[in-house]
Length: 291
Image (cartoon, rainbow, N blue to C red):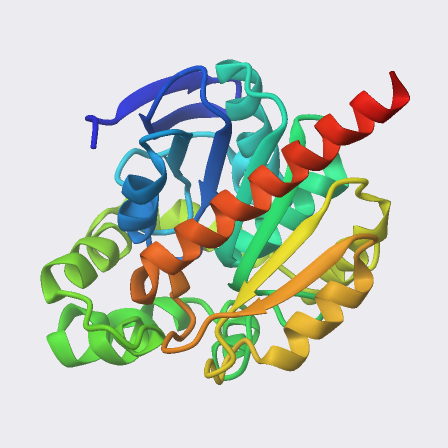
């Protein structure tokens, strides 16, 4: 994959990986809390031969370049940052893909300004009042206590703590070097920690409930590529999200947990490619009939 570049966006600097043909159909990946774009790397590689794959490192705790502005440090602020990225790269008819907290960000993107998004893919992610799921929703209590989140995440300085906090979200082993790379910015960089806490303090389930219940306003199709074995983001939540959309389909991805892109990267790439191609074919057939 190519080396990342840093884009100067209105809300601040954003590190972005941009691969594949520049004129190919665009797929933009939105990761979740305390991880970065490396979560998507294998899926992006599987798509990059015929798609333009864009993977930003969003200010969600594992970022190494501070965004430097509080305007971007809320769920809606990060969604606006994604929109600024689409504007800067002049991407249209985008396939937007979200996981974990990134799925919530995608829903806020659609709620803010969906004009550049052609279709949405959600893997196991937040929705409605699940923001985040139990037991991670204890963060809503901890963030009210000075130093509470920092104390709760301190065990991630150790290998076992990292595995419990992040490694258990995948069925396939995540190397400790990567888990450490994801957790170090929050644990060691005061600016990153301050930005992360600003995001957490602005994240409330009631805001996502409003966005999730407005998903029916989105005109494009939605694919829910969901791991039913995930005990955090259950298949019942996937069905609720499907039913909230105007045009949605649920596909179950076996042998995976929350981090579907890590556990089943090729299967997820195949589903994304087929989903996008089917919509393009349907649009072409409709145009032909109209003519």
